[in-house]
Image (cartoon, rainbow, N blue to C red; front, side, top):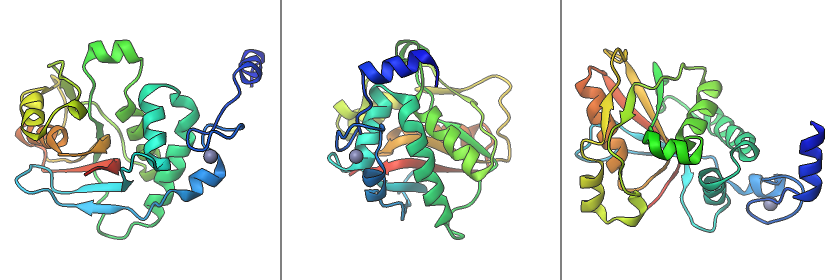
Length: 215
Ligand SMILES: [Zn+2]
């Protein structure tokens, strides 16, 4: 740890995102509370074959608080917690989870990326890629600056992401099983749209992975 980060630590001590105890960004006690049993969800009328989720989205739960922290601020400090949860989840997997050829994070629009400085789906995809030892790529680009899905109802969500993504020139997805990664899955509109575009570009199978599945 450098001198500057030591100073920062002293002036702004790390608080656990869940219990607010001083020490680390996610304390061991809270991390142990997260169930990593995982669930599989098979959406109807979707190009997505299935969705694998580490846990459920519950506003007050530790997993949701980690996701909120990742979305709005300190990425580095919660990254180790995410990597550990994904590692625990993967250790429990049997043959239901198919190891893909490629991991693809849901992209942010470049303007939003510039404002935030990182893509939370990318951070999660990175952790997953290391755990399951599969390469990561970015064949998708978000061409439409969509509204935040959380503020819209189901029909509006579908319209919002319709034609939101395009395949990058030269992207190699033909005949590949692609696993699309995001932080949260709710109506599945975003992931369904990504799956549709990837299938049109020649992907043989598209599945999804999220940290938490919401209602
Ligand atoms: Zn805690």
